[in-house]
Structures are given as structure tokens and as C-alpha cells.
Amino acid sequence: MLVTSGEKTSMSLPDVVWLNTSTSLQCFAQPLLARLSHQVTLAQWNYQQDPDKGCSFDEAIFQLHQYISTLKQPVHLIGHSTAGLLGLFYTRRYPDNVKSLTLLAVGNNPAVDWQSHYYAHRPLMNRQKLLNAMVYNLFGYQDKQTLQDLITILEQDLESSLSPNSLFRQMNVLPGGVSVPLMIYGGQNDLIVELEALQGWQPWLKAEDRLLTCSEGRHFFHFFQASQVGEQILKFWNNFSQPNLTKDPSLCNVIPKI
Image (tube, rainbow, N blue to C red):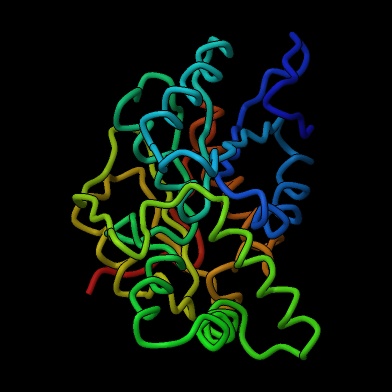
């Protein structure tokens, strides 16, 4: 069942909360949310960045905590990119409220997102050419109309999303894990969060944690490979949702230690 963060009844308290920090990029989550909602009660929690205020993760954490506190039970948190960073911050601050944390396309420097790459190259390239390049890096080659549609989405994200990065500041977050079960899931051909950045989580992984990769889909692999990604996430959650269930150590695509 898929509910919004504002819908809570005794019959629809969510097991899972999907974190969203970008209205424009939320479209890429829909296939995965549809897949997951067949098996769990899932709520979408949305943070709308005020364009007249500076980006504040403290404010986002405060609002998220207000919502989760009303659920009166720990939940599985899941987020992609910057939404995953928000989930990481929240879990480190309020671990008793989180059953597990799943991070999609989040590297060992969790503040790295597509915007950090954009702003790093902006002084060297004009906006239009850089956005064209970012579409290719994020999605691969596209026809002219799709290219323009995706550029529009990225422009909207630059203007209205919660991001730790700007033209004047690049955030660095100290590496480290969390006390709750953790899944890191990334794309093998992601040019934003590369395989090395995923591998960098290894020193902080616990026995129950999982580090997986998807062979296709780039940075938005959860959109293009929603069925595969959803299956692996559900397997991970089942290990902790049903205590009598034997844990499954055979999840495919687990990254070996080098």
C-alpha cells in the first residue's frame, strides 16, 4: 500500500518511509515505489525547499522527526542521493526511530550528488553545454526532445531542491556508518557515485549490512531497473521485519572486498 506522509490510520501506518527532497526528480522513483508498495505499506515523505531561504538540513531533519514521531514505531527509511543523505543524518541522530536505512546512489562521501559535479564544472563551461553533458552522464545518449525534457527537470532541481552543494560551497560529510542495519545500493556505471565511492563504505559495514550494485541504469538505476532493485530491497527488509525468518546471505551483486 502506498500512502502519503499526511495519511495515517490504524490500518495504514507505514512500514517504510521513502524520503524525497526534490519534487522534480521524484518522477524517477515511481516505478520502484509501485513495486515496493505491493509488498509493504510505504509512505512518501516530501521536503519542499523554500527558494527564499538557504538550504538547511537541520530544518529538514526537524520536520522529518515531527512526522516519524507520530508513527510511534520504528520504520525502514530509504532515499536516493540527497534524500539518502538526509536519511543518514536522521538515523545518526535518532537511531531508535529507524528499523533500517537503505541508501541508493550514495557514496562514502554522502554529500556528493549530481549538483556537486555540476557546480565543480560550472566555472569552466557555459550552462547549456554543461546541462547537456550532465544529461549524458546521468542518462546516456538521448534524442533531442528527451534531452530537452531532462534538461528542464535538472534546471528545476537546481532551483528548488535541498542540496548540500552550491556554486560557492561544496559540503563534505565525514565517512562512517550507522548503528541500524544498512543497505548501500549503487549503479555500476554511475558517473556521479562511482564504484570506488561505493566500495569506500566497506570499513563501516556490519555483519547484517549489504552493499550491492546494479549493472545498468547509471545514477537513476532504481528507475530503469525497478523490479530488480525492489526485489533486493525487499529481501533486505525481510531479514529484519520477520525475526523468525532465516537471514539470506546470498543477495546477488554484493560487492566483494578488494
